[in-house]
Length: 238
Image 1 (cartoon, one colour):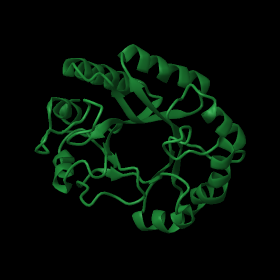
Image 2 (cartoon, helix red, strand yellow; image 1 turned 60 degrees about the vertical axis):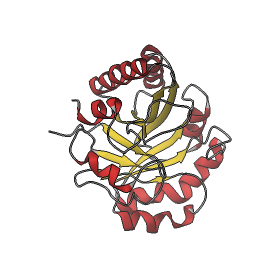
Image 3 (cartoon, one colour; image 1 turned 120 degrees about the vertical axis):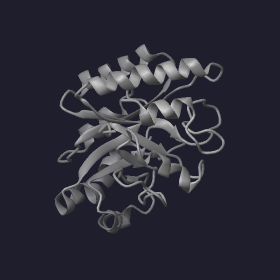
Image 4 (cartoon, rainbow, N blue to C red; image 1 turned 90 degrees about the horizontal axis):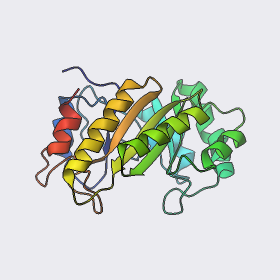
């Protein structure tokens, strides 16, 4: 089965066993990230690992970590627009980008993804782009949680209209319905197919590759680490 170049795995540390990830070695997934700058213990052959500089901590060592992973793409700053995540102003993010992230472009010819905002409708991403003068942002990164395929699709289209010169990665998205698995399944299928059809959606990763995640019914694995109905569709369906 040919891999889907867009479809990725959001691999939540501590929510599955190392052997579980190897089950994605045959299927549609073509890349994986884990909110860290070092890969999971087991990454199947043929699946690209994409590191992330989650926040401000340890950013001074980013050069060495990118060199050791031989990464071709870097994600930066997880949900800086909310206090419970990397929590920084657009101006601070731009300052760190210019000092530590932008130099990697010339040193490694690496592709750079914008900070991954929790709310693409807020002004945070625009303010960052305005503040980051001279920065190379190869693609935008956004997250979305909610209900209704039409609402997610509308957010994507609104973001594309706002930033028409940038392709988009969706590195977290899920339906938050907790009492009807069929609704979550339908949401996943409709939104993934929509993104597959849009050339400006470059990559996506459903939340989440895990056995269980409290408060959501979007985990792709069952309690034994095998694919559930969602996981079988996401990993195996083209």
